[in-house]
Image (cartoon, rainbow, N blue to C red; front, side, top):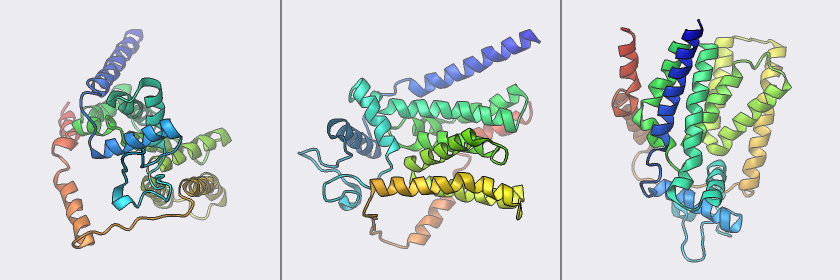
Length: 288
């Protein structure tokens, strides 16, 4: 029994050390691409001016024909978590590509750890089988392409995972757990606004279709005790960031709906290609 536990611990540490190697190896080797550069420039502005300005006194950078900027050239549209985590890292470690990407890479690595925790607690009790799930994701090239970027992707993955973990006990958790759940959902919001909308929609659908709580007042109050404060905080944060509720209207040529259908088709077409290599691993593991 003791030898079995020791073997598992060695395996677990080895796997996550391997994840760490793939996460941090050569993190600063490449220059920023377009989106990363935008995040890094706004983060640099936070370090120097305390505000996410798109004007550095010499150059102006504002997507959507500058519609993300207000009259003072402050970006009022980009969610703030990616900017401030990048700014803190750049303040501590300098303005290199490695420093700017470092916090996002750490978030991505933590996401694998929380994914393992979620699977181990709620789905697969056997530790070896539970370890296979983060292993599938941890062997996906596109996963590292996302989390090694100076962008919000790793934050969304991490805090969506922690939110799902906390959601599993929503009807029995005490107030400290509810506060953590609220903070986790707010973290998704300040990573990417739309991702929180999608997550909340999915959780509401899950409660109605699978939890089948019906008209159970106690359970609905338990559910709303998390999501109402989250909604209030999200509105307050958005108002603080964008007090005039400035929205962007982007001109696009062609049929918008048809373009989205084509993108959806591409997603299904490519689901088992390079970026979804874990599907191949999963099918192979069924024969083990």
